[in-house]
Length: 342
Image (tube, rainbow, N blue to C red):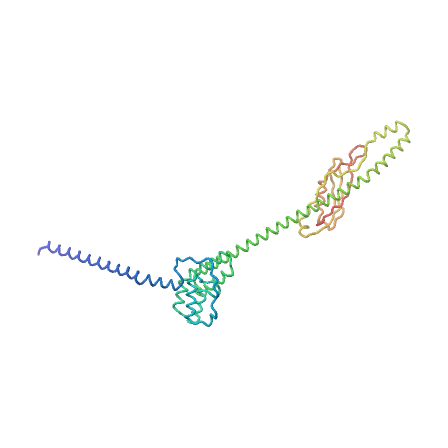
């Protein structure tokens, strides 16, 4: 037997088989393409048209104000499906309440459990309806968002998207509560600061008025004291007789009482300010020859131990022109009543 002819025959058979396989594959590919364009794609377009649009169609930012149909409870399944398709076309997936696709489809399932059209529509449009609920959360319309999430749960209670939406709604609610609390805290702090500043200014004004009145009183009594000292000096000179007595009086020097030259407004205690308490403190202190105060003590106060420290701190900052005896600065004692009023 000629082996060369056998080899050629086998190679020819393998080539023919390969050509048949390629032809079969090409035929199947053409059939698949034809089926896609002639059957599958038109069917999908029809389904999406009935359900309210294409997945790429964006959800409108605002739901049109469409009045709900009258007597929905009396509608049959076909009427409810018709209303649901209208709502899908208008992208009214979950809103407004009472006139949206999900509510119509759910009523269909109540009347006819297992209805294929309603079941498929709810499943296929669930992602778009979830976007509507997310928009309500982002705009902080929390009541509306909760209503839409509850509606989604009726359609598919085990869908994981519900967990995400509920977590986001809870987070947004907590964030809003935190922001509102921060705003209230800031307003309260600002109010307290304003009240504190007003109280300190009022206390400073009252202390200045008290010091001014004390100074005026000292000025009134000073001429009388000067006249008394002059009369006494004249009598001494007359008794001593002549120029020698006059010379001794001239060397006697000047006598005067201590005069406040720099006061200090007491700082209103924060606890008393918050409690809106008023009171007074009588303070005893020593005016040193250098004009500073020392040995500051509380003689009496009402109420006790509320304004004591504030009054003592204020007196420690007082500065006086010291009292003079025969031209020499001397220390003197003084008491002063300091008022604390709102």
